[in-house]
Image (cartoon, rainbow, N blue to C red; front, side, top):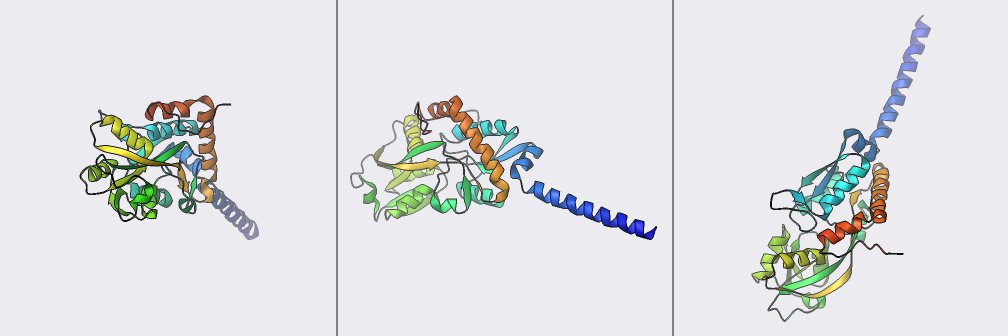
Length: 267
């Protein structure tokens, strides 16, 4: 009897070990975790039109909001947006506070060392903006020794610093524009679509675009880990479906004033 009881205990211990390994394996698949809980947590700023902002009724809207909702639907879950400052977005993805970010995040080699990125969903230009009466700055090279303004750690701040500018950190695009208009900053390096959107909404603004460059590729970041591999595959599959059925192009045209900036080419 003791031998039989001992064998039962050994068998139970082995079964519990197998269950523990299975649970650990399941917990390392973020996509499965998301689908089991029924929602995906998406980080966004909520104050950067036309990517993510609040309409007149205070509803969260924008290209990235609709994109996040579409991806969530294709994953079979609810999209839950968490609004936060730019500096907290990537840190929150890295820590697991957010599953992904939909916030016009640009791909850079430096960021790719820490995060996995989806295929691009927008190919944007970077523009150099100054006050309308500024005649000193006509190219990116003219930023050497000047002041620019951007959210800290953004790709645009990094570009400005690369040209020799001193960057004044702000929290939102509206703050950026005000510093330039007030003459407290000489210029801003920024997203073409965001600046165009602002100038269409504020045609009286004393601003002008003096230069532009290609190369701002916008993607969805997730934390770099084996547990995010299937989630990234699912996100890329969702984006590909949206390219093929035209819904990605439609979002671009809706929020970018009729422009298709998805990089989609017609055969």
